[in-house]
Structures are given as structure tokens and as C-alpha cells.
Image 1 (cartoon, rainbow, N blue to C red):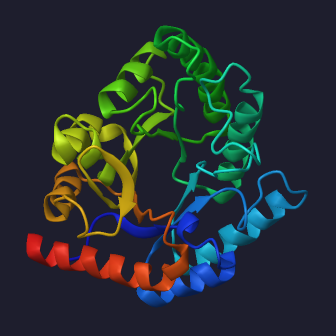
Image 2 (cartoon, rainbow, N blue to C red):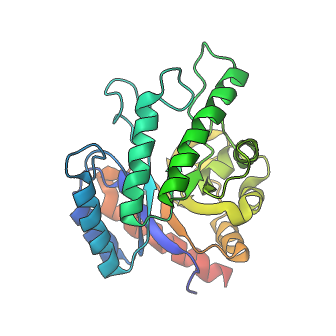
Length: 281
């Protein structure tokens, strides 16, 4: 069975490979899309030659016929001491806003399906209501940048963050006035971990706003990206739901802690997807 979506892999799972070698491995394993995490070691968004490198990458992807999504989950790009900080709900969020602005600019050069982003964890000294107000205000700025550049956003609910599930993301979109640039990223593993209606309910709730899918397995209540078949994800049902929705974007495996065995994890991952599609048929 040939899926309507493109099967990709996240570069954050190839941290010990160059970007060229990452693409070589993925091409050899039969992948057809890339989920590019901006930052080290593959494409530093703040490097002097970032736009030149993005243009070269787009040329290579054009040769392969691959779509790309831009991911913004770099761990230590903005602060070498604190992972993922600052976020959109930190009081001093200017570095995050500058990063997202650059990500949008690079996504335009890459002709990316979307820029995927998330809210962040509410700081311990801040009330959730204050964090929500701050998030809405800052997302207005991000949406305006994306709209001006003709780039879609894929807002991703993350376990433990202010926007934790698809319902939260939909509420945020509504409060922003339902902008066209605001789409949704769904991580299938997150659906196992925190979505109250599971993977089917989350995907159906996102519906036509779904612009990016991350593929991994998880256990209920535990935010740890596992290889497919190592958690509780019903992959057959998840893929069937994507087909039911007519999803035509990128579905990329995301295993950010598996760089030590990146080629092996990539080979096992695409095999698991193909086996699930055969079972679905």
C-alpha cells in the first residue's frame, strides 16, 4: 500500500551525521521527506551562510522530490546551559522570538510545509493564566511573521507544556482569531502519553488543520520517544486515521535520543511503517 503522506525522518535523530550523510542514509532506506531541526550540527539558523545553505538543501531535496518541514526543538541553541530555554512563556522570550522569525525566513527559502513550534513549560514562579496571556500576545507576532512570509505554522502540543494537547492548541488558535497560517503538528507518541481521546481522537480533532505529523511510540503518562513497537501506540490505527483524513503532508519519525544507532533506527522505523500499512490493507 502506498500512503498519501510522505514518510520522513527527523534530523535530530542523526546528530552524529552530517546533513549530507543523513540524507544519503535516508534515501538508501527508502524515505521520501525530511524533518529538519534547525541548529547544530546540520543548519545553524544564525550562521552567516544559513540562507545559502538552505537554498542548496532545497536544491538537493528538489532532486529527490522530497518535501521538508522545519522543526524548532533544538535543545541548546538559545542557551548553552538550559535546555529549550527561553520559550514563548518565559518572561524574557526575545531570543525565542528571534529564532522563530529566522526559522520562518528559512522555511520560505526551503519551501517547507510548515515551521513546527510549541509553547514551553510554565515557569515555576508564573501562574498559568499569566503564561497563557503571554503566549497569545507573542503568538500574534509569530503568526504575523508567518503570514507575511507565506509560511504555515504547525503548533505542537507537548506533554508537560502549557499547550499540552490538541484541544489546547485549538483554543489558542481560536483566541488568535483562527488565522490561516496557524496549523497543528501532532506527535503520535504524545497521543499515547497525554491525549485524553488517544491518537484517533487527537488526529480527528486536528482534522484539516493538520500540517505535520511526528511518528514515535510512547507509554501512557511518560514523555519518552521510543521506537515503533516499543510502547502502546496502535500504529495501524494511527496510519488508517491519517488516510481517513486525507492527510498529504510529512509523517516523520522522531527519535532524538537514538543518534547512536541512527541508521539502524531509521531502517527499523520505515520497516515498521510499511508493515503497519500492509496490516491495515
